[in-house]
Image (cartoon, rainbow over all chains, first blue to last red; front, side, top):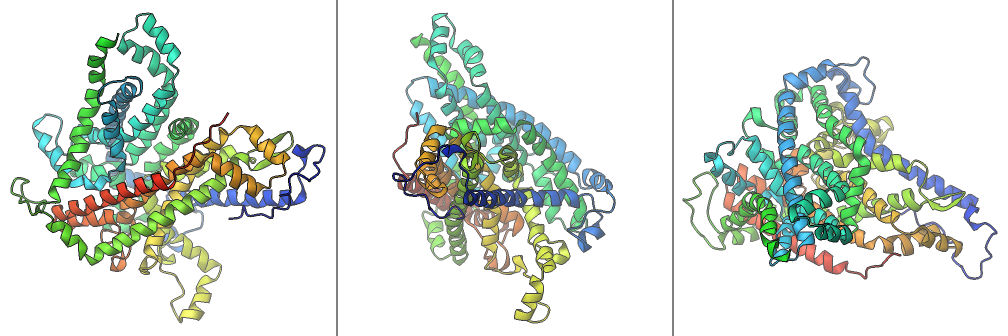
Length: 306
Length: 319
């Protein structure tokens, strides 16, 4: 790697230190800094350029896109977005995604926080077993479950509100598949919380539930928010699970609709509408991420560094 | 207090365990059962017959499966190594790479912005990533970014001289040997940012005075990186490695959307996940799909355990 710079100063003991070593920035060091800066910038460009290109392409005409893929549009084609929203059904897919994700996120966070809390703070028979049961789910490849999952969901058709092509079914499936990850990280998070507050609350006669709701949840708020954001991104972008459960066209979610748009020959001719649809799909996650990126990162670190 | 513990514990575990059990554990258990049957996936699940290890024997002489295995193996080696190296390098630059007046060890200028930008690919859905890279690697006529750029700088002219008339463009999706490497590049592209952020957090928790001491001792940047930064974040690297290895065994959505259900020309871009999907939904052989799935599960588990063991190392306690 480029880090392999000459190690000219590797004789530490005998070397005479400059009076203010902290400020000693030599010309060689500066050259390395420029080089490193270049690499940082390069990777920044590699990550952002495809995105920017997609956004710019969404405003072009199809003719412009094919003849000059890298040029800027001559005029902004807002009509692309209208076509994507109405003709390509992105509008309906968008609404479906919002409904499913709002349900699944609520359930994921509530059920995971409750389970993680008792796993982290209570000593009971089977604690380890349940913990590893959840943890084991992290290793399972999703598509191993796809075919049986279809039948499991289909078998719930007798229960009103469940069955295939149901928002609630998909939300429940999302919840189940998010639990290993969420429980794993929240358990680590609840373990880090100080016990002193808990002891004080117990001495004051606080019940188990009140202790959780009034004391532990507020203390765990940073972790909960970060994981909620993390799960929001995961659920919003989910592609494989809805493929199995949402089969009727009016119930499909956004990622599914987008993949369908790529494959459908009818829209292969209208590439700019595909890009407009892509922009519509990525806008919510981009907004959420830009607004809350500090919190997403804080929560991840809390879990991964434990 | 102690005697009222169990009702509470049960009440808190029940909803989660119920949903998890019905919608996640039970499909997996059923998948394992299906792998020992002849079920096609079309008929009712009650009309199926137990056939023992028949499906597993079929795995042994499935030529296409060997291609998928080889590709997963390539991803398993290449993706974690390259991703973690780039991420460690970028993260150390961002967090401890700068040497500015007044502070011995800081991040470089603009590091906060870089951390936001690098993370972008992670918030995108695989469908979007796949759409983007479809067009990045497409032929220039179809709006391919890479080929338009390389044609503009004359790569097509050079290639035409070497390969003869009219073959000046690299058709990325037309070369069977390229396919899995395209998938690897896309995976690396989407994961690096995540681990830059993860490693950044780990590096932020290293006390600054350790770096100041290293600087006073005249340690070069490379030595500081290799002997200080990397060992101190090794625990995080280990977890990240396992996570990436699991991801590399997946790759389903990317291959499925970019290369299609057959894994591209000659099926050379095939991976195990797509093989499962193909068997289940294109070839209507749910039992065989489940068998490949079980193989994939066993491989993933074995790899996870292997990596955990191989990367075990004494944990360094920071002050």
